[in-house]
Length: 110
Image 1 (cartoon, rainbow, N blue to C red):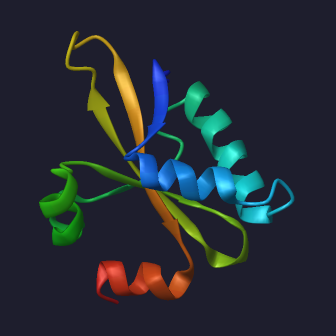
Image 2 (image 1 turned 90 degrees about the horizontal axis):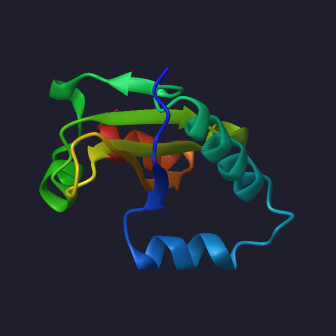
């Protein structure tokens, strides 16, 4: 198992959206649970084959690896793994977002 040095949101806007979610929101609770799992093992999600990574994520974030975690009600959270720029020994989990199944299908072109 690989444990990350930190788990972060891809940008301030995504973090703001998360912070504004109700603490009772089942999706927020699930994201918090997944983050806890990620601190134990960065590979707890399902890996997306490189050829299936949506071009939109590659163009917007420069993603070269993508992972998916299931959330309640068929929602999904996507994240990528990067090396800290200061040292190649540190792994950072970057949460790219979460979406309902309809948006997930659109993202992946199903």
